[in-house]
Length: 234
Image (cartoon, rainbow, N blue to C red; front, side, top):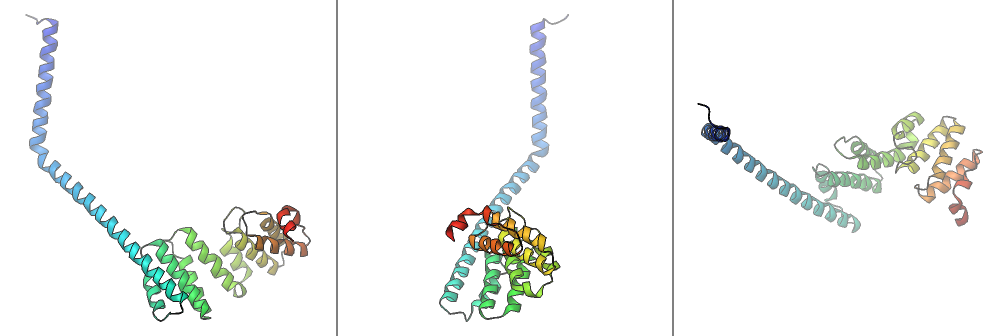
């Protein structure tokens, strides 16, 4: 005899609930140890990550203090152990510390008229693919300026091509050196246009813009109209 509809639905729900309960119990019996092990591993990994972060932050703080101390010694003329300390910091895993140490090594070398070492440090920094572009670009600009007279125009133009574009933060310096390289190649019209573009870029420092106006003028291009503020200063 068929059960009433309500009773059939109630019976089906009870059977379904019992099946779910049995499946859950089977799952707990079969996999409880694995679930517990996974939870323990997760907690251990999380704790390890937090500890690693803390160690990294502590190391970065310690290295920053060492770098600051090196700066103070340089300013005070007490540079006996500075080169060794900077060399150690130049191997830091912290981007800012490593880049600052290398840039300072180059500056100290220049102060001692050791151009070869300064150039080598700038090249090393520019070639460090593990560092953000902001640090590598600084090294590229400073290194190229230091080497400009010994590089071929093609080398200068190729090296600075990514930076010698309007809107780039280094457009002033990179554009000026690129334009000078083009002058060496005899490409006066291209150089004049680039000097004019440098003069017109309001993000470029005024000293570079003023110089660009003057050089562009000697090449037959009047760039002064694009920078009335500088005209007023003159």
